[in-house]
Length: 290
Length: 331
Image (cartoon, rainbow over all chains, first blue to last red):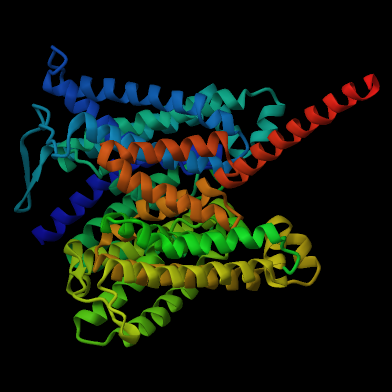
């Protein structure tokens, strides 16, 4: 019983982390029609930058949350620059854009290896969330509950942004029909930069938030990118609800798979993605943005 | 096919002779091994090029096919079977997997095709990485010996190079025949105008399926050579990075040409092996080359160089005739 409870809580935690990662991925995919293959790199860079800010190597020891925020902003800037100066040159050539993101992910991975070395760096749990919660004989780290809370807060904030603000309406219009959006006077290309920066920033933030659970190591990008892909394919591109539900589903499949069928863990992780792509290419919630 | 110019034939003959003479011209075994690597990756790239260049379908899962052939050989050899049995079984097994790949991924084109092949490649990688009782996980499988067909000991680097060269030449010839056949023309038709081809009565799906199978065949052959070359296989050879590297070979050299993937394979292998001795950040270089080629020379090195050379000759001959025209009236 305790085992199942722990596994379930871990699954929800991981799902929350995946939502932070994949929400931006989904919006970029929905708007620009390309999978951003640097998204895993953004996650890793966010985590690395955060650890540097935490360690006080810059002369000032930042608070965990402040470090996560600054790292997210830096990664968002990186995303904006990449969209503006690389992807913008290839407007309309989706294949070339995908290949460029792939090339950049190679470069980022190598730069991180150069900057932060090959050893895994563990991230200290922020003070205040170091405790444990006891429930029904199970002991559960408080920080993981905190991650779930953060994911829920971000989900609500993103939903409000998309549903209640002018920017959100513009993004929805762009996802729905970029040409029509352009005709009615929305600067879609500017929207691309904003959404790319937003998505990258969210991924960077997720990297730092995930730090105390996953730690940071070379190859983290290659571990996270396929997960984001699976979530977004499952949930449908450009759909916030889809990436939320997809994240929770994948969180469960990943954790239960690792615990119960470790030999086939990746098989049962990617199988739903293939099935969805083959049987329902628009994803479970595709075509609607919420 | 028969209209090939004499110059072209001479060039091909010289190239084959140069490739055959290579191991005797090079003293160091290290460089002979690099040459073998280039040839086996060129076969892989030629296979991927059939899909990317001629069918217009970009696959990011081909390392899975490459690896499955290698794993079947390694597994059968370690469980005591002979080389011939292992190779035949690897071809049959990996071609069956290729057929599954094709059946699933050809429901889509464009970005969706990339995503499905990527997911399928990751499944194969995940199995190799995690199904430890079968694949020995991250530690990989070592293969003790290379075969010695017809009394040729392939354990020797130069002999192995010769065998790889023969397989490579056969692959190039097969690709050339495939591409120039009516089927190849139909395949290019499905790339450029799938709906018109459909209206003309061609079975677009089936044409793509057979192209996928041929692509898979070359990929699997390269995988078998790979496991014999390294005498080792581990999940790294199946990872997304490996698929991306193969794609880089095709695109950097020039997708949709026969020479392009070969040049691309040489470029990538040389950057990986030779440049890594001098530059520590070769992975960064690989990524940077990728980005630069996609942005500045999207058609690839071979067509790009041909275009540059043509425009150079044209401008040169034009200036010559222009100067002749200016000089003419004076005389």
